[in-house]
Amino acid sequence: MTTRHAAIVGIGATEFSKASGRSELQLAAECAKAACDDAGISPKDIDGMVTFTIDNSDEISLGRCLGVKDLAYTARIPGGGAGAAATLFHAMAMIDAGVCENVLVWRAMNERSQYRFGQASANMSSATGGHSTGSLLWCIPFGAMTPGTWGALSARPYMEKYGVTNRDFGLLSVQQRKYAATNPKAWFYNKPITLDDHQNSRWIVEPVLRLLDCCQESDGGVAILVTSLERARDLKQPPVRILGATQSIPRHVEVIANYYHDDLTMMPEAAGTAKRLWRQTGLKPEDIQAAMFYDAFTPQVFVQLEAFGFCKRGEAKDFIADGQIDIGGKLPINTHGGLSGEAYIHGMNTMAEGVRQVRGTAVNQVRNVRNVLVSSGMAGAILARA
Amino acid sequence: MSTPDEAVPVVPAAPKPMRLAPLMTLDAKFFWDAADREEFVGQQCGDCDRHRFPPAPMCPDCNSLNTLVVPLSGRGTVVSWIKPIHPPALGFKEPPTVALIELEEGTRFVSNVVGIPFEQVTLNMAVEVCFEETMGNHKVPVFRPSK
Image 1 (tube, chains in turn orange, cyan):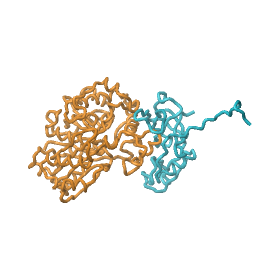
Image 2: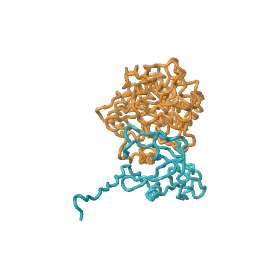
Image 3: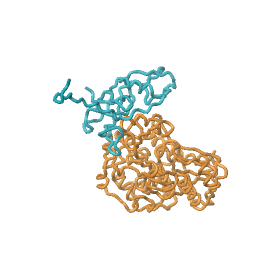
Image 4: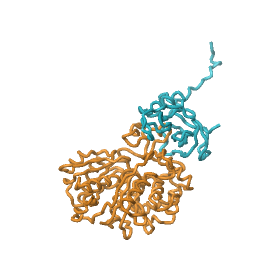
């Protein structure tokens, strides 16, 4: 039986930009150091390191930058941003098991200045298994060669079934930019948009995604430091307990070219993540005061809201139109501005916002927060006041 | 002998295909080889008879390695369709209609719908397979409205 409990004690980030002017390894080292400083833990004492399979910085080089004395555990999570929250799952499991004392989770990238996720590349070898997801190669010869096209083709059956339009997606975009406008760290600080701005932005993929439905491409790094709750109580910040964390990759689910599971009008991986998280924690949707959802593209938030049971299937558009995701609504979401408003650090910056909401230090702070859901779709965690 | 007054009519060379060639993997080679011959095939389990796609070396239902490559009917319906605008799709002069086709055999296949304007495609529209050329002398299955 588990007697230890994992807690997040440090978060750190670089600035979010379009051209960092330094290496990804440096971004990784800077955000990792910032997370350690935030916690009051020496980087040398990190003994676990977790990142994404596609992060370009390796554990040994980053460990050498930080002066890590003895690394007991390393892991990399699949699924790109959709898997982001699985990093917390690994960290929690290693702390709970007593295998590690201080687990560093990081993600750093020059994803605007050095390469661009949003662009098609003539070299599609990265679309084969092991590099990203198994089935993107079945899209390339047909002109679907960007995350926007893959995501849009996944989203349209949901739109058709429930009568959801791009204008409905726009209301989410407007809300996230409203949050970003008051967040000094956000790229779109002081730059709110109207629904007209959204509807006048150019099509990226008809009739699903306009420019303002898409996440940014960003340079930057974000790190999260996890230790045991017992140790956390003696550190600088109020501990944020990882009440539960899990991953779910149901049969026939793909990362973004998600065309092969039975019901194309839902997100089975988020439903699987939700089921496990509610079971792990004994909580239910009404127990959550704020949620942070991975939003590479606006439709992903709609199907996650429904998968977690915050509203019924097909009703996310009404939930959002009714103002329920605004700061005074039933469930404020992506209060940092999301990946469209703040920056796209592959969902890691969204999880850091979950930590701030529990600490009570978010710029758009939700009142009386006890439990925050962070979901990247294929993985999720519930963060709670200790 | 021809004179300048009797110029031979110029037959324009057929435009070279711009479409990107498929990415070959060992598990999918059979599919693209068949497509080059304008055959639309799929994998069927030799033990439990279930069809599967994308191609895989093992049946996900009974874990058999006994795999048959069988001709598919080439008939299906459109279950999703989009038009990529920006960035422009590599290999296309005009934005293609990218579609998800549900095949008669029960599997789904990402492809293009051709021969009909994007705006006229409808949910569950019946389509049938045909083939288009790619760079490197390959062919890929695309779909047109059923006759």
